[in-house]
Length: 49
Length: 316
Length: 66
Image (cartoon, rainbow over the protein chains, first blue to last red):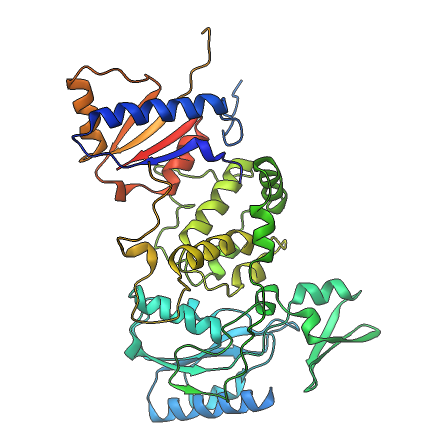
């Protein structure tokens, strides 16, 4: 509906799993980088002169 | 249809005279053709206002939330499912209600009829043979009722009320060979870009009147997210992202609760097919949780109960 | 700025992933700096309006972690 599937991620990480946190954080960043900047859903700020 | 009307009046009169209920919610003739309006009857002498025909598409479950008195309510299939949802969500007590079940013969779509004729419609009547006769300034046309049904009624598989205290007539035969989700599968097969274009086109006419929200029996939050201003989750203007946000969130709030009664689509003044959004969620609930909203009073809806076998493939 | 870097808004549960992030910090592990953390009391606090609001305000990605 305008949001690419790779822009929204869900995960389940216990508070003891810092290695998994680092791994998932890297994966999420990678996935979003591949998609490029979000253009579809950004609300343009109203320009005030 | 006349038998239905007579029977509804007779039941309503009895309930009010006996004092079983304080009021009966039903339909009366609207001031315009094809537009019946909800009607609250409190005195036995007023029951003759009540009618039943194929223009009773408004969902009467909408008028039940947070009421304190005893209510008799006229309910077709979808209304009864929304009443079940209200009971599950503690918006009304089952003991407060006397449900007058109406086996539904499907409702007709005023917009379809208006598109089939030219000029103002002054009268719409129905014959026993399943014809709809439309009269207006200098014309009279007859259509098959099946041609002019509301889209949700054409694919309805729960025409008979699921809960009722008494029925107005014998149950009607349910449709079994309908494909409820053909249009949704088409959308699912689209690419991301096509889908975005499809939805942008779908709600491009939206004027943010919130009629879909107001007509919906599920929408009863004291403050709707669109009216919250601190923080403001969604802007109030015609910005395309705000329109999108409104429609997404409205649809999500109905997930696992929507009974596809069609009230939202019927209420939309610009004819947006808002059901396209809720229907996808309904399909997912059916496929992932084998859930149809408002069918039983015992089961908890999938979104407020945890089961170990809930699907979780999307979670890393 | 030489290369575009995404901004990812992450909603982390206080008791799970936020703890994991804390532990990762204590353990001096390295992870991408694109993550902007918002701590929520529980993943149950998450609402679709948060995700949409983040995207609307210009986030490139949203990550919800329990």
